[in-house]
Length: 193
Image 1 (cartoon, rainbow, N blue to C red):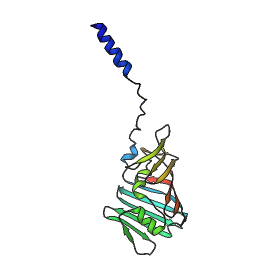
Image 2: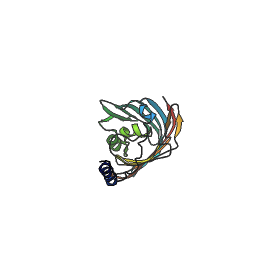
Image 3: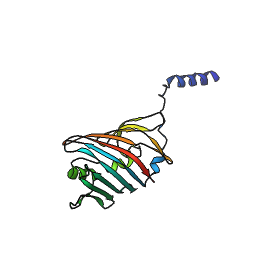
Image 4: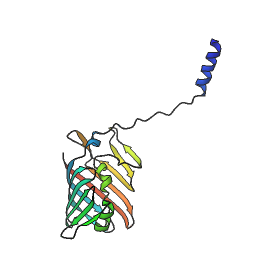
């Protein structure tokens, strides 16, 4: 009887294939809890229609409640993009406000280049946005270094401690739009919580 059990056990073990090592998923980042902030910095854009930069102040109250103020040459003086559950509004200088349901389409129509605000809500915190993403690479600390998502290729760098959070201070994003290639560079100089 013992001989039969031993033979069965050895047979069962011999039929099992070694499993590849499991790579643990990165631990949930404290930045995922960050929902309210003000960012101050610079936004640079290179596209077939526009090359320049602007000062940026981004006030975020929740995922769909924000105010982004661009000032300087790229903002043509002053451009304010506001988002709420009711929709997106863009006011440029003294022009009448434009409204839409999607910030990326609205900025493409009005400014000539896309600004994917819905995804940037996550990207500025060094996180992938919900939905499909590929080519995610992380450094030894588990911080996102590169990502391809929503038609954009992103590179995150210069992570710094900001209170309880470790956040990127530089994000380079590029996409191939209908009018040609677009590169958006965000330099975050200050986080206020």
